[in-house]
View 1: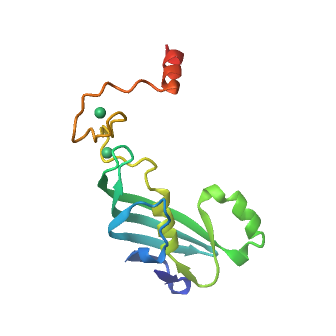
View 2: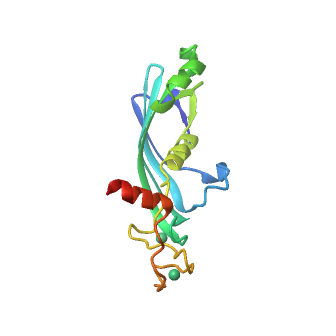
View 3: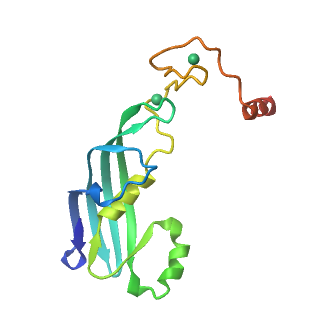
Amino acid sequence: MLIRLSEIEDVLVVKGEMDIKRFAMTDDTEFRLLAPVSYELTVAKFDDTVTIEGPVTARMSLPCSRCLEDFDLDLSLRMAIKLTEKSASPDAAEMELHNEDLDVYYYEGDEIDLDPYVYEEVMLNMPMRPLCREECKGICPTCGKNRNTEPCDCPEAPLSLFGEKLKSFLN
Ligand SMILES: [Zn+2]
Ligand SMILES: [Zn+2]
């Protein structure tokens, strides 16, 4: 959604849905959206700084990293970013390097497109190792069965070399 800074009097509350089709899904994004990514963002402008803050929610289906079965995930996050007008800082490129971990972005002109920022927040908040449930038993490394649905009698897999080392270290 496009917002116009000149139309912000005090603060602007923007409620909307992100158009996911605009963003090319790369091969490593295995999720499928079950409901649109929706947001309710408060946009405020002070001099040459714009803050965008508020909840973002999404419902998606993605494979569990242990058992590989698809499961539904409700993603709910709170985004808070700050944008500075590009022309206001002549050394913008240099500052960008320094501000990399501060969630500071730059805008130019009167319009800000919210969707790319919302998309980025969603991607940043995706679980690294999604689990269908905390106690997911995963796939048996010996027979390949999903141990959540088909318990097998295979002996417990021996500890990996790293595991053995860690164990002797801890003892
Ligand atoms: Zn699982
Ligand atoms: Zn097994």
